[in-house]
Image 1 (cartoon, rainbow, N blue to C red):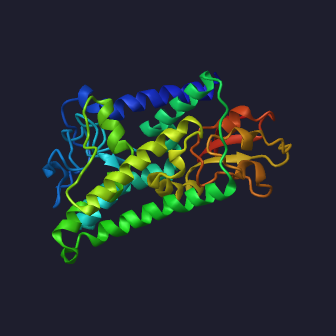
Image 2 (image 1 turned 90 degrees about the horizontal axis):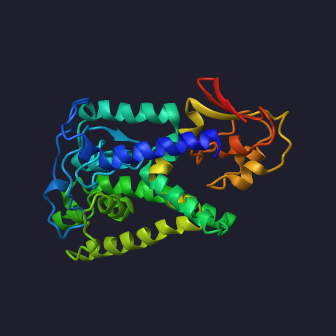
Image 3 (image 1 turned 30 degrees about the horizontal axis):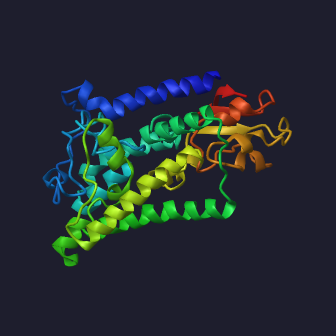
Length: 328
């Protein structure tokens, strides 16, 4: 195993333990940023037969990160939740900008510094998908590639999910939709995110698998079953869920402006195509870019497979604030 991959695997394991089992390890809350007081509706008030039932205690720290930490982790994780949960929840509560600002600045700082590196190195769901890729290789099975039209469809899907989820979160903060609809569509993305079903199971807690309260909750239950099944396509298509994930779509907006960048020496590139063939999420920009030195694609997760596999010394570099960290 190459050194970068080894370092990434160690980081993924450590982050997996902290994010998923932080509440088991560290039982006392840590005050870092001012706590946002919950509004109505509250996830802690849902009954056991509701999708949004939460078995966990409060998180160790009220911090939201641009990766798939989750409110539904058994016993509570170290972090409160992902950035999309943070935005959705507080848009519905209509939390004041003053109260939200410290938490929003923390998320923005991580996104501007690292872009989607959090997806490739920190996200527990990403670590599980990388585990599925490892298992597929051990079984001697070849990976499947998606067609360009399918990739475009998934790209549009994740951005549609992102903005539709945020729009619904804003709308249900107003009473004219009716209490039933507002309640059923609270944290709508969470309701069909596979983490809501996977993460509690990893802590020995059975989540709510079916909510028959209304036609809306039953529909969202079916959507949750569908996305849960789609997640396991990661056995044959590396990081399949990353191609749908709305949180990845949100952090992807910061990738091209992030302080962390991947740069290519056009003079040293021989157009061998190794980077394009070996990229887990099938990014072609590193291969196709022929003008600008920065080749950080909005969907790049900084796994750095392209740097490891590039046969040309010094052709690709990872830079932070313009300073080289590692090169091919």
